[in-house]
Image 1: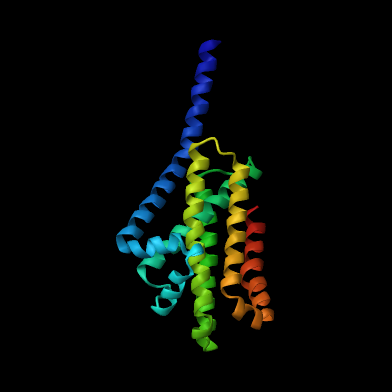
Image 2: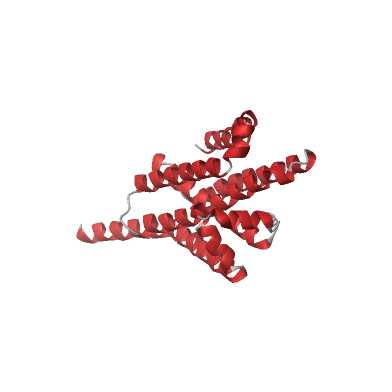
Amino acid sequence: MLILLNESYLQALDKITTSNHWITLVLMFLLFGIVLLKAINLSRLKGSIYSLFNINFIETESEEKTNFFDFFQMVFFIFSVIVISLLIFNFKIYTLPASDASFYSFLSVFFSLFCYFLLLKIVEYLCIQVFLIKNEVRFFIISKSRYLNTISILLYVALVLSQYTNLKHPYLYYFTGFMFLIRFVFHVVSNKNLIFKKLFYFILYICTFEIAPLFILFKLMF
């Protein structure tokens, strides 16, 4: 009987180890992404990490005419999407324990979010070009992107702590919600002149491009 119990215990451990192994690899891949960002441009990485508290960095980015298609920002974009995908996947497994916890299930979440964020970037770019408002909204677009970079780094740290310490999952989700709320507040405050002058269009933008697509994605995932 004792041998059978030991064998069952070992099998359970093997299953847990196997199911979590790919998460460790993804977190290591994200760490490599941070190292790559540091190698590309250390000063921009530091500025991105502290951009919530350093508006001068965003103003400098805006004045230097950097764009989404530079290599540094593309790497950060993929990093952010993977982090958010891991958080959503983690939340899905927590709320729906019977759901598939495999790497392939995570990939479906990642590709859904990747397509959403990429399409959002493309639509934003096309609207800016068509309506000739590049100079007016440049700071708005860059600040939104850089604030996402900042919270992505912080959420990555939270994911690592959640995975390898006794940090309870609800705290991870509360922290995630808090960080996105902070990002929204800082974004509104730093763009208050533009937003309050065009309040109707800002609300329309939030509902059309930020809330509605994410609501549809969550309905499809859960």
